[in-house]
Length: 453
Image 1: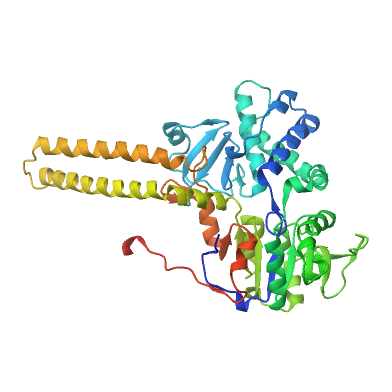
Image 2: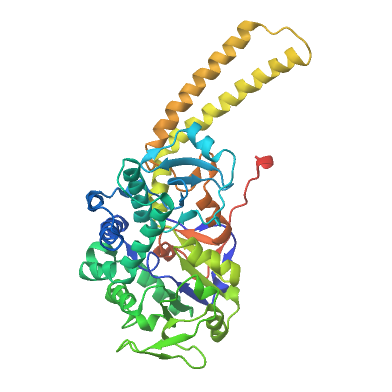
Protein backbone atom coordinates (compact mmCIF):
# COMPACT_ATOMS: atom_id res chain seq x y z
CA UNK A 1 0.00 0.00 0.00
CA UNK A 2 1.17 3.53 -0.70
CA UNK A 3 0.73 6.91 0.93
CA UNK A 4 -2.32 8.87 -0.21
CA UNK A 5 -1.81 12.61 -0.36
CA UNK A 6 -4.35 15.37 0.21
CA UNK A 7 -1.91 18.28 0.54
CA UNK A 8 1.82 18.85 0.27
CA UNK A 9 3.93 17.55 3.13
CA UNK A 10 7.72 17.86 3.18
CA UNK A 11 9.10 15.33 5.65
CA UNK A 12 12.48 17.06 5.47
CA UNK A 13 10.95 20.00 7.41
CA UNK A 14 9.32 17.76 10.02
CA UNK A 15 11.41 17.69 13.20
CA UNK A 16 9.10 15.72 15.48
CA UNK A 17 6.69 12.89 14.65
CA UNK A 18 3.98 11.96 17.12
CA UNK A 19 1.97 8.76 17.09
CA UNK A 20 -1.22 7.53 18.65
CA UNK A 21 -0.83 3.97 19.94
CA UNK A 22 -3.98 1.87 19.50
CA UNK A 23 -4.65 1.15 15.81
CA UNK A 24 -1.69 3.36 14.85
CA UNK A 25 1.62 2.12 16.24
CA UNK A 26 -0.13 -1.01 17.50
CA UNK A 27 -2.27 -2.93 15.02
CA UNK A 28 -5.22 -4.96 16.28
CA UNK A 29 -6.99 -8.00 14.94
CA UNK A 30 -10.09 -5.84 14.62
CA UNK A 31 -12.66 -8.57 14.14
CA UNK A 32 -11.45 -10.62 17.11
CA UNK A 33 -11.21 -7.57 19.38
CA UNK A 34 -14.61 -6.17 18.42
CA UNK A 35 -16.23 -9.60 18.83
CA UNK A 36 -14.97 -9.81 22.39
CA UNK A 37 -15.97 -6.17 23.04
CA UNK A 38 -19.48 -6.90 21.74
CA UNK A 39 -19.93 -9.81 24.16
CA UNK A 40 -18.37 -7.95 27.10
CA UNK A 41 -20.64 -4.94 26.56
CA UNK A 42 -23.74 -7.14 26.41
CA UNK A 43 -22.79 -8.57 29.81
CA UNK A 44 -22.37 -5.03 31.22
CA UNK A 45 -25.80 -4.02 29.92
CA UNK A 46 -27.36 -7.01 31.68
CA UNK A 47 -25.43 -6.66 34.95
CA UNK A 48 -25.22 -2.86 35.24
CA UNK A 49 -28.30 -1.64 33.34
CA UNK A 50 -30.68 -4.55 34.04
CA UNK A 51 -31.26 -5.32 30.37
CA UNK A 52 -33.07 -8.63 29.66
CA UNK A 53 -30.71 -11.62 29.71
CA UNK A 54 -32.03 -12.68 26.27
CA UNK A 55 -29.66 -10.18 24.67
CA UNK A 56 -26.70 -12.36 25.68
CA UNK A 57 -27.64 -14.70 22.83
CA UNK A 58 -26.85 -12.04 20.21
CA UNK A 59 -24.08 -13.00 17.80
CA UNK A 60 -21.53 -10.56 16.42
CA UNK A 61 -21.48 -9.73 12.70
CA UNK A 62 -18.31 -7.77 11.92
CA UNK A 63 -19.55 -6.64 8.51
CA UNK A 64 -22.76 -5.14 9.89
CA UNK A 65 -21.01 -1.78 10.54
CA UNK A 66 -18.26 0.13 8.71
CA UNK A 67 -16.20 3.08 9.87
CA UNK A 68 -17.81 6.46 9.18
CA UNK A 69 -21.49 5.68 9.76
CA UNK A 70 -23.66 7.74 12.10
CA UNK A 71 -26.43 6.77 14.50
CA UNK A 72 -29.67 8.76 14.49
CA UNK A 73 -30.49 8.23 18.16
CA UNK A 74 -33.93 9.80 17.91
CA UNK A 75 -35.19 7.33 15.30
CA UNK A 76 -33.14 4.19 15.90
CA UNK A 77 -31.45 4.38 12.52
CA UNK A 78 -27.93 3.77 11.28
CA UNK A 79 -27.01 6.07 8.39
CA UNK A 80 -24.45 6.39 5.65
CA UNK A 81 -24.11 10.05 4.72
CA UNK A 82 -22.55 11.79 1.73
CA UNK A 83 -20.04 14.63 1.93
CA UNK A 84 -22.98 17.02 1.56
CA UNK A 85 -24.73 15.58 4.61
CA UNK A 86 -27.40 13.72 2.63
CA UNK A 87 -28.53 10.28 3.75
CA UNK A 88 -27.61 7.78 1.03
CA UNK A 89 -28.46 4.49 2.74
CA UNK A 90 -29.94 3.54 6.09
CA UNK A 91 -31.02 0.74 8.39
CA UNK A 92 -33.60 0.71 11.15
CA UNK A 93 -32.22 -1.89 13.49
CA UNK A 94 -31.22 -4.76 11.21
CA UNK A 95 -33.70 -3.88 8.46
CA UNK A 96 -32.76 -1.68 5.49
CA UNK A 97 -34.98 1.33 4.87
CA UNK A 98 -36.20 1.43 1.28
CA UNK A 99 -35.72 4.61 -0.72
CA UNK A 100 -39.29 5.90 -0.24
CA UNK A 101 -39.18 5.46 3.53
CA UNK A 102 -35.74 7.02 3.71
CA UNK A 103 -36.98 10.01 1.71
CA UNK A 104 -40.04 10.33 3.93
CA UNK A 105 -37.88 10.50 7.05
CA UNK A 106 -34.89 12.52 5.81
CA UNK A 107 -35.94 14.01 2.44
CA UNK A 108 -33.40 16.59 1.29
CA UNK A 109 -32.40 17.48 4.84
CA UNK A 110 -28.77 17.63 5.94
CA UNK A 111 -27.43 15.52 8.81
CA UNK A 112 -25.79 17.89 11.30
CA UNK A 113 -22.99 16.17 13.20
CA UNK A 114 -23.32 18.69 16.04
CA UNK A 115 -26.92 17.55 16.63
CA UNK A 116 -27.03 15.82 20.05
CA UNK A 117 -29.17 13.08 18.51
CA UNK A 118 -26.40 12.18 16.05
CA UNK A 119 -23.54 9.89 17.12
CA UNK A 120 -20.54 9.31 14.83
CA UNK A 121 -18.93 5.89 14.47
CA UNK A 122 -15.55 7.03 13.20
CA UNK A 123 -13.04 4.59 14.69
CA UNK A 124 -12.29 0.88 14.55
CA UNK A 125 -13.40 0.71 18.19
CA UNK A 126 -16.90 1.88 17.14
CA UNK A 127 -17.83 -1.24 15.16
CA UNK A 128 -19.17 -3.20 18.14
CA UNK A 129 -21.04 -0.08 19.28
CA UNK A 130 -22.90 0.16 15.96
CA UNK A 131 -23.60 -3.57 15.80
CA UNK A 132 -25.03 -3.59 19.33
CA UNK A 133 -27.23 -0.58 18.64
CA UNK A 134 -28.67 -2.13 15.47
CA UNK A 135 -29.34 -5.44 17.21
CA UNK A 136 -31.01 -3.90 20.26
CA UNK A 137 -33.20 -1.62 18.16
CA UNK A 138 -34.26 -4.72 16.23
CA UNK A 139 -35.10 -6.59 19.45
CA UNK A 140 -37.01 -3.60 20.80
CA UNK A 141 -39.13 -3.50 17.63
CA UNK A 142 -39.82 -7.23 18.11
CA UNK A 143 -41.24 -6.56 21.57
CA UNK A 144 -38.34 -7.01 23.98
CA UNK A 145 -38.70 -4.48 26.84
CA UNK A 146 -35.81 -2.11 26.18
CA UNK A 147 -35.32 1.66 26.62
CA UNK A 148 -36.17 4.19 23.90
CA UNK A 149 -33.80 4.56 20.94
CA UNK A 150 -31.95 7.56 22.39
CA UNK A 151 -31.42 5.94 25.79
CA UNK A 152 -30.25 2.74 24.08
CA UNK A 153 -27.48 4.64 22.32
CA UNK A 154 -26.39 6.42 25.50
CA UNK A 155 -26.37 3.28 27.65
CA UNK A 156 -24.54 1.16 25.07
CA UNK A 157 -21.83 3.84 24.90
CA UNK A 158 -21.66 4.00 28.71
CA UNK A 159 -21.33 0.21 29.02
CA UNK A 160 -18.69 0.17 26.30
CA UNK A 161 -16.72 2.92 28.06
CA UNK A 162 -16.85 0.95 31.32
CA UNK A 163 -15.43 -2.10 29.53
CA UNK A 164 -12.51 0.07 28.39
CA UNK A 165 -11.96 1.76 31.76
CA UNK A 166 -12.47 -1.05 34.30
CA UNK A 167 -9.94 -3.45 32.78
CA UNK A 168 -12.45 -5.84 31.19
CA UNK A 169 -10.96 -5.40 27.73
CA UNK A 170 -7.37 -4.64 28.65
CA UNK A 171 -7.01 -7.58 31.01
CA UNK A 172 -8.36 -9.93 28.37
CA UNK A 173 -5.90 -8.53 25.82
CA UNK A 174 -3.11 -8.89 28.40
CA UNK A 175 -3.92 -12.57 28.87
CA UNK A 176 -4.43 -13.30 25.16
CA UNK A 177 -2.19 -10.76 23.51
CA UNK A 178 -1.26 -12.87 20.50
CA UNK A 179 -4.95 -13.25 19.57
CA UNK A 180 -5.62 -9.51 19.44
CA UNK A 181 -2.36 -7.69 18.68
CA UNK A 182 -0.45 -7.88 15.39
CA UNK A 183 3.32 -7.52 15.50
CA UNK A 184 4.80 -5.52 12.61
CA UNK A 185 8.63 -5.47 12.51
CA UNK A 186 8.57 -2.84 9.75
CA UNK A 187 7.11 -0.28 12.16
CA UNK A 188 10.15 -0.72 14.40
CA UNK A 189 12.54 -0.48 11.43
CA UNK A 190 10.76 2.74 10.43
CA UNK A 191 11.17 4.24 13.90
CA UNK A 192 14.88 3.42 14.06
CA UNK A 193 15.34 4.94 10.61
CA UNK A 194 13.61 8.15 11.73
CA UNK A 195 15.89 8.28 14.76
CA UNK A 196 18.95 7.98 12.52
CA UNK A 197 17.64 10.94 10.53
CA UNK A 198 17.37 13.03 13.70
CA UNK A 199 13.58 13.01 14.05
CA UNK A 200 12.18 13.32 17.57
CA UNK A 201 9.56 10.59 18.09
CA UNK A 202 6.57 11.02 20.41
CA UNK A 203 3.74 8.80 21.60
CA UNK A 204 0.48 10.50 22.60
CA UNK A 205 -2.12 7.92 23.63
CA UNK A 206 -5.33 7.81 25.66
CA UNK A 207 -4.29 4.44 27.09
CA UNK A 208 -2.84 4.27 30.61
CA UNK A 209 0.85 3.64 31.27
CA UNK A 210 0.55 -0.07 32.18
CA UNK A 211 -1.42 -0.90 29.02
CA UNK A 212 0.89 1.25 26.91
CA UNK A 213 3.93 -0.56 28.31
CA UNK A 214 2.32 -3.95 27.70
CA UNK A 215 1.60 -3.25 24.03
CA UNK A 216 4.87 -1.48 23.22
CA UNK A 217 6.90 -4.17 25.00
CA UNK A 218 5.16 -6.75 22.80
CA UNK A 219 5.16 -4.94 19.46
CA UNK A 220 8.44 -3.01 19.55
CA UNK A 221 11.04 -4.50 21.87
CA UNK A 222 11.43 -7.89 20.08
CA UNK A 223 12.42 -6.17 16.85
CA UNK A 224 14.77 -3.43 18.05
CA UNK A 225 18.24 -3.51 16.50
CA UNK A 226 19.75 -0.18 17.57
CA UNK A 227 18.00 0.31 20.92
CA UNK A 228 17.33 -1.82 23.99
CA UNK A 229 13.82 -0.63 24.84
CA UNK A 230 10.97 1.30 23.22
CA UNK A 231 11.40 4.07 25.80
CA UNK A 232 14.77 4.87 24.16
CA UNK A 233 13.04 5.37 20.81
CA UNK A 234 10.58 7.99 21.97
CA UNK A 235 11.62 11.41 23.17
CA UNK A 236 8.36 11.84 25.06
CA UNK A 237 5.56 9.37 25.76
CA UNK A 238 2.24 10.80 26.94
CA UNK A 239 -0.28 8.35 28.41
CA UNK A 240 -3.90 9.01 29.45
CA UNK A 241 -3.73 12.06 27.21
CA UNK A 242 -7.55 12.34 27.08
CA UNK A 243 -7.55 13.42 23.43
CA UNK A 244 -9.10 15.56 22.06
CA UNK A 245 -8.90 17.43 25.39
CA UNK A 246 -5.09 17.20 25.18
CA UNK A 247 -5.26 19.63 22.25
CA UNK A 248 -7.78 22.04 23.77
CA UNK A 249 -7.43 22.28 27.58
CA UNK A 250 -4.40 23.25 29.65
CA UNK A 251 -3.93 20.23 31.90
CA UNK A 252 -0.74 19.67 33.94
CA UNK A 253 1.70 16.87 33.08
CA UNK A 254 2.47 14.13 35.59
CA UNK A 255 5.88 12.46 35.35
CA UNK A 256 5.88 8.64 35.45
CA UNK A 257 8.70 6.54 36.86
CA UNK A 258 8.85 3.64 34.34
CA UNK A 259 10.38 1.29 36.93
CA UNK A 260 7.55 1.65 39.45
CA UNK A 261 4.72 3.36 37.56
CA UNK A 262 4.56 5.99 40.32
CA UNK A 263 3.67 9.53 39.31
CA UNK A 264 4.76 12.99 40.46
CA UNK A 265 4.06 16.52 39.33
CA UNK A 266 6.18 17.45 36.31
CA UNK A 267 7.84 20.73 37.22
CA UNK A 268 9.35 23.06 34.66
CA UNK A 269 10.19 22.08 31.10
CA UNK A 270 8.97 18.78 29.66
CA UNK A 271 12.07 16.75 28.83
CA UNK A 272 12.69 13.21 27.62
CA UNK A 273 10.54 10.77 29.59
CA UNK A 274 7.12 9.24 30.16
CA UNK A 275 4.16 11.32 31.31
CA UNK A 276 0.44 11.28 32.00
CA UNK A 277 -2.01 13.97 30.89
CA UNK A 278 -0.75 17.37 29.85
CA UNK A 279 -1.38 19.88 27.10
CA UNK A 280 -0.19 19.97 23.50
CA UNK A 281 0.60 23.69 23.69
CA UNK A 282 3.17 23.21 26.46
CA UNK A 283 4.61 20.14 24.74
CA UNK A 284 5.15 22.09 21.52
CA UNK A 285 6.67 25.05 23.38
CA UNK A 286 9.03 22.85 25.41
CA UNK A 287 10.13 21.02 22.26
CA UNK A 288 11.02 24.45 20.83
CA UNK A 289 9.16 23.76 17.59
CA UNK A 290 6.65 25.52 15.38
CA UNK A 291 3.38 23.69 14.79
CA UNK A 292 4.14 22.90 11.16
CA UNK A 293 7.37 21.17 12.23
CA UNK A 294 5.36 18.43 14.00
CA UNK A 295 3.58 15.59 12.21
CA UNK A 296 1.01 13.54 14.14
CA UNK A 297 -0.35 10.16 13.04
CA UNK A 298 -3.56 8.69 14.45
CA UNK A 299 -6.59 6.60 13.57
CA UNK A 300 -9.35 8.79 15.04
CA UNK A 301 -10.61 11.49 12.67
CA UNK A 302 -11.84 13.71 15.53
CA UNK A 303 -9.64 12.80 18.50
CA UNK A 304 -6.39 12.69 16.51
CA UNK A 305 -6.82 14.88 13.44
CA UNK A 306 -9.68 17.41 13.47
CA UNK A 307 -8.86 18.69 16.96
CA UNK A 308 -5.23 19.36 15.98
CA UNK A 309 -6.25 21.31 12.88
CA UNK A 310 -8.65 23.43 14.91
CA UNK A 311 -6.22 24.26 17.73
CA UNK A 312 -2.62 23.87 16.50
CA UNK A 313 -0.95 23.92 13.15
CA UNK A 314 0.50 20.42 13.41
CA UNK A 315 0.64 18.42 10.21
CA UNK A 316 -1.60 15.37 10.27
CA UNK A 317 -1.74 11.81 8.96
CA UNK A 318 -4.56 9.33 9.32
CA UNK A 319 -4.17 5.55 9.57
CA UNK A 320 -7.16 3.71 8.09
CA UNK A 321 -6.85 -0.03 8.58
CA UNK A 322 -10.18 -0.90 6.82
CA UNK A 323 -8.98 0.92 3.69
CA UNK A 324 -6.67 -1.98 2.78
CA UNK A 325 -9.61 -4.29 2.12
CA UNK A 326 -11.44 -1.56 0.21
CA UNK A 327 -8.46 -0.89 -2.06
CA UNK A 328 -8.24 -4.59 -2.94
CA UNK A 329 -11.97 -4.61 -3.71
CA UNK A 330 -11.58 -1.54 -5.95
CA UNK A 331 -8.81 -3.27 -7.89
CA UNK A 332 -10.80 -6.49 -8.34
CA UNK A 333 -13.97 -4.66 -9.37
CA UNK A 334 -12.19 -2.30 -11.80
CA UNK A 335 -13.30 -4.14 -15.01
CA UNK A 336 -16.93 -3.97 -13.91
CA UNK A 337 -16.59 -0.30 -12.97
CA UNK A 338 -15.12 0.39 -16.42
CA UNK A 339 -18.12 -1.27 -18.04
CA UNK A 340 -20.51 0.73 -15.82
CA UNK A 341 -18.77 3.94 -16.95
CA UNK A 342 -19.08 2.85 -20.58
CA UNK A 343 -22.80 2.10 -20.24
CA UNK A 344 -23.39 5.41 -18.42
CA UNK A 345 -21.82 7.24 -21.36
CA UNK A 346 -24.09 5.38 -23.77
CA UNK A 347 -27.08 6.31 -21.60
CA UNK A 348 -26.06 9.99 -21.53
CA UNK A 349 -25.78 10.05 -25.33
CA UNK A 350 -29.22 8.47 -25.70
CA UNK A 351 -30.71 10.96 -23.25
CA UNK A 352 -29.08 13.82 -25.17
CA UNK A 353 -30.80 12.61 -28.36
CA UNK A 354 -34.09 12.37 -26.50
CA UNK A 355 -33.71 15.91 -25.18
CA UNK A 356 -32.92 17.19 -28.68
CA UNK A 357 -36.13 15.62 -30.00
CA UNK A 358 -38.05 17.15 -27.10
CA UNK A 359 -36.71 20.60 -27.99
CA UNK A 360 -37.70 20.10 -31.63
CA UNK A 361 -41.22 19.24 -30.58
CA UNK A 362 -41.85 21.91 -27.95
CA UNK A 363 -39.57 24.79 -28.96
CA UNK A 364 -39.56 24.57 -32.72
CA UNK A 365 -42.91 22.78 -33.14
CA UNK A 366 -41.42 20.17 -35.44
CA UNK A 367 -42.97 16.77 -35.94
CA UNK A 368 -41.10 14.01 -34.10
CA UNK A 369 -41.69 10.44 -35.35
CA UNK A 370 -43.24 8.37 -32.58
CA UNK A 371 -41.26 5.34 -33.70
CA UNK A 372 -37.98 7.20 -33.17
CA UNK A 373 -39.04 8.16 -29.64
CA UNK A 374 -40.12 4.63 -28.82
CA UNK A 375 -36.81 3.24 -30.07
CA UNK A 376 -34.87 5.67 -27.87
CA UNK A 377 -36.93 4.79 -24.81
CA UNK A 378 -36.41 1.09 -25.50
CA UNK A 379 -32.65 1.55 -25.84
CA UNK A 380 -32.50 3.56 -22.61
CA UNK A 381 -34.49 0.86 -20.77
CA UNK A 382 -32.09 -1.77 -22.09
CA UNK A 383 -29.04 0.22 -20.92
CA UNK A 384 -30.67 0.83 -17.51
CA UNK A 385 -31.18 -2.90 -17.12
CA UNK A 386 -27.54 -3.56 -18.03
CA UNK A 387 -26.33 -0.92 -15.57
CA UNK A 388 -28.50 -2.39 -12.78
CA UNK A 389 -27.00 -5.84 -13.36
CA UNK A 390 -23.49 -4.40 -13.39
CA UNK A 391 -24.09 -2.42 -10.19
CA UNK A 392 -25.27 -5.58 -8.46
CA UNK A 393 -22.10 -7.37 -9.58
CA UNK A 394 -20.00 -4.42 -8.38
CA UNK A 395 -21.63 -4.45 -4.94
CA UNK A 396 -20.53 -8.04 -4.40
CA UNK A 397 -16.94 -6.88 -3.96
CA UNK A 398 -17.70 -4.54 -1.05
CA UNK A 399 -19.40 -4.61 2.35
CA UNK A 400 -22.71 -6.47 1.89
CA UNK A 401 -24.66 -3.93 3.96
CA UNK A 402 -23.03 -0.58 3.21
CA UNK A 403 -20.82 -0.91 0.14
CA UNK A 404 -17.72 1.28 0.00
CA UNK A 405 -16.48 3.12 3.08
CA UNK A 406 -15.23 6.15 1.14
CA UNK A 407 -18.19 6.54 -1.23
CA UNK A 408 -21.90 7.16 -0.82
CA UNK A 409 -23.35 6.50 -4.25
CA UNK A 410 -21.52 8.60 -6.82
CA UNK A 411 -20.36 11.06 -4.16
CA UNK A 412 -17.66 10.81 -1.53
CA UNK A 413 -18.94 9.68 1.86
CA UNK A 414 -19.00 12.05 4.83
CA UNK A 415 -16.06 10.09 6.24
CA UNK A 416 -14.04 10.50 3.02
CA UNK A 417 -14.78 14.22 3.09
CA UNK A 418 -13.43 14.49 6.66
CA UNK A 419 -10.29 12.58 5.67
CA UNK A 420 -9.73 14.93 2.74
CA UNK A 421 -10.30 18.07 4.80
CA UNK A 422 -8.22 17.27 7.84
CA UNK A 423 -5.53 14.69 6.97
CA UNK A 424 -2.50 15.89 5.03
CA UNK A 425 -1.77 12.28 4.10
CA UNK A 426 -3.38 8.93 4.89
CA UNK A 427 -2.41 5.27 4.73
CA UNK A 428 -3.59 1.80 5.73
CA UNK A 429 -0.86 1.25 8.35
CA UNK A 430 2.12 3.16 9.73
CA UNK A 431 4.62 0.76 8.14
CA UNK A 432 3.44 1.88 4.68
CA UNK A 433 5.90 4.76 5.24
CA UNK A 434 8.85 2.32 5.14
CA UNK A 435 8.97 2.69 1.34
CA UNK A 436 9.62 6.43 1.60
CA UNK A 437 12.69 8.37 2.66
CA UNK A 438 12.35 10.54 5.80
CA UNK A 439 13.09 13.44 3.44
CA UNK A 440 10.26 12.69 1.00
CA UNK A 441 8.27 15.63 -0.33
CA UNK A 442 4.70 14.38 -0.67
CA UNK A 443 2.76 16.26 -3.35
CA UNK A 444 -0.87 15.62 -4.31
CA UNK A 445 -1.85 15.10 -7.92
CA UNK A 446 -3.57 18.02 -9.60
CA UNK A 447 -7.27 17.52 -9.05
CA UNK A 448 -9.54 17.62 -12.07
CA UNK A 449 -12.57 19.88 -11.58
CA UNK A 450 -15.84 19.06 -13.34
CA UNK A 451 -15.35 21.81 -15.95
CA UNK A 452 -11.82 20.56 -16.71
CA UNK A 453 -12.73 16.98 -17.60
